Length: 159
View 1 (cartoon, rainbow, N blue to C red):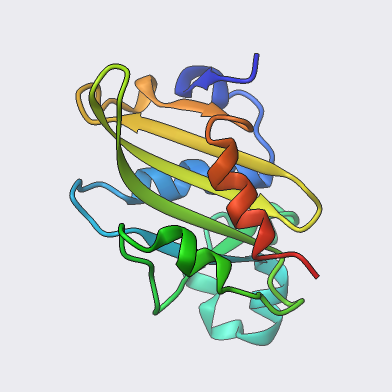
View 2 (cartoon, rainbow, N blue to C red; view 1 turned 90 degrees about the vertical axis):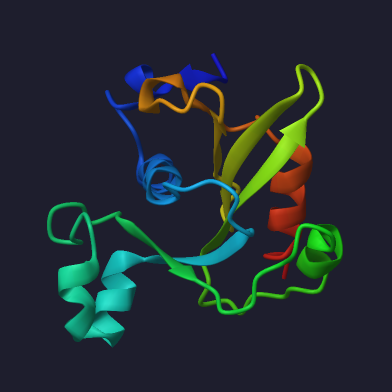
């Protein structure tokens, strides 16, 4: 299925799925502003900055396809998200982009934290965590959970 719980996600995940899980788990607190990340292969980042080796998890030696998310200094506000994303044009060195943000969904009225990521090659993955059910095994995972947000992120990578 397109939607998996955290229990099913742990069995076999690719590097992008693993990165989305890590970003979701890193966002431990609620009521935070949106955070935007550039995604780069960990091996490329390590080649440019060997001093960062201790910060990369998993290390490129253990997972050659590992990805690293680099939080950006400029982040969108909740009010101007679409406008903010429309104004981004990532350089070719950026392999993908991710965002972590909170939203109120209508049916049922529920606070959720969305983690969405897309790569230049078209790979995409998302996580939705419900505030009311804030347990790691209650997170929804899938590629098409928030298609409009994924498309807006993908547009920032367009050549």
